Image (tube, rainbow, N blue to C red; front, side, top):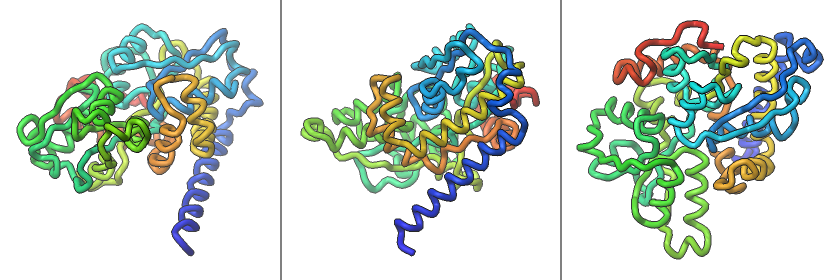
Length: 345
C-alpha cells in the first residue's frame, strides 16, 4: 500500500470516528425529532474569532441547522481577547468560541457560563524565514513576533520555553503585535524573521509568500516548530493541547435540551468543514473578509488531526492538567483556581 493509499485510509477512519461521535450524540436522546420539546427562541447569537474554531459556528448559521429552535441565528466575530471578555461579561452572545483559559478565568470571576466542548487541540506553529529551526531552543538569540500579549499564543510559548530552561526576554526576545494578521504582514514585508501564528494565519502567510506580485518582495517562509509536538515532547503527553472550544452564556447555559441540540449540530458542522474544505473556505470568507478560501482550506488540511470535538466533561482531565500548568506559573490566567465541576458542560 503506497503513501497516498495509507493517507486515504487514515482520512476515512477519522471520518468514520467523527461520524460515530455524531451518532453517539443522537443516541444520547436528543435529535431533531425532539426539537419541538425545546423552548423556541426569537434569536440565537454565535460568536467567535476568525480562527478555525469558528468555522463550524458559521456552518450552523449558513445551513439553517438551528432554524427549528430559533427564528434567527447569526454569527458575529470577536477580534481580540479583550473584545471576547467584554462580550461574555455583557452577555451579548448565546454561544461563544473561547480559548480554554479564558473560559476558566471568566467562570472563576463569576461570569455565568458553561464550557460545552473542546474542538481545537492545537493550531499554533512557528513560522520562520529559516528552514532549519525545529525546536524552541533553536530560536535562542532571535526575535519572535508574538500576537495577543498575555493570551493563548503568548501563554503557551512562554510556558513551553520556561519548561526547557529558555529565558524569554533574554534568550529569546518577543516583539508583541495586536493580531496574527499583523504578525503575518511583518513576515511578508521582511520586517520580521520569525513569528508565532495560529491557523489560518499560518497557511495564509505561506500562500501569500509564494504568490505574485507579493513574491517579488516576500521572503521564503517555512512552517517551523509545531507547538503541539513541543507540548507532547516537553510534558511527555499526547501532542494535543485543549486550546479552544465553545461556551454557553447565561441566556442558554441552563437549557439542557438546547445545549444538547447545539452540540449535535456543532459536531456535524465540524465534520462538514473537514469534508468540504474548499466550500468551507468560501463560506468563511463571506463572514470574515480578511480570510482567503485557499488559506482556510490549507488550514483545515493542516489541522485535520487536531480539530476534534470532545465534550468538556470528557476533556476535563486534559483541561485540568493544562490549567494546573498555568496556575503554577501565573494563577491569574485562570482566575486563581481550578473551575468547579459545573463548569464542564
